Length: 337
Image (cartoon, rainbow, N blue to C red; front, side, top):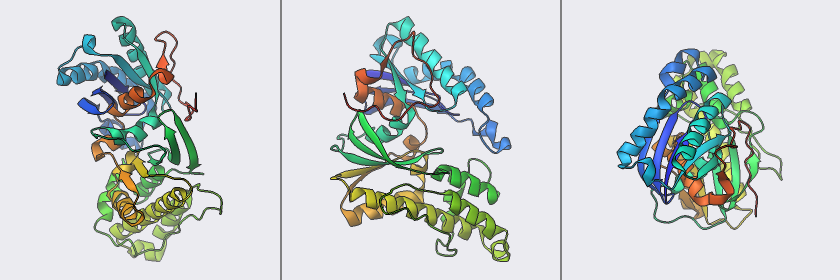
């Protein structure tokens, strides 16, 4: 089954051609960081205009790299939500037009599901269900119980800032610019994670929820103190990152003890963070739990993951080219049936 994937939920214009939800024949992504960096964050109007300018060429590029034409495809998968509404509209409208003109099935995919199934790309075998997914992206930090490809249930989430948001805001405090997450990851590698005792969020006994606003605020107050002004930026970055990672590992460990999981999937943009990857890898060795993490290139928003979802969810996400609409608040759960 050959699917063209289209992803425009935020600021990356991405297209891909994927066979059987696993083999990536082409994966194209145009980064917009240079357009947004001077504003310190993503400007929705700029993002949607760039998608409009780039998407047609990105589709042609992916098909060309895969040695395909639209006639060779078995369907088109597109991110329907959640995300920035202006960005989503460009991708959805383009996918609808292509599907209608080519008489191809259309699949409207949840962007967050894409991050989970990105871990299955370029692998020979998938984990057995149920498995636990830790999804950490720019706007989301959540644990997901995955009972089947169409039965995905959020069992924990952040109560305020997501981990990715905390990284970006802390990077701004350190003067590292945008995007902040990768900059902190690099700086932290030369710092001491034990130099500063930033707080770790402690959840209630029966809760797996997370909170990262307190860590961010603690960094701010520390940097405004005499000790903070004398501290090495790399030590601040390393200590902050260690605090975030400790919370995430704690919640994974507690969730893994509550259900018969055989494996854990780490996904989302923050899954590219080397500190988190190494810490979860060490936890995996201690616990004996299998760990699946996409390569860094597939942790960021990409269209291959959207095709991977469509392949697995099939008729549950099949859409009418005339009626599919972009939904910036698309719900996460499909449920059973």
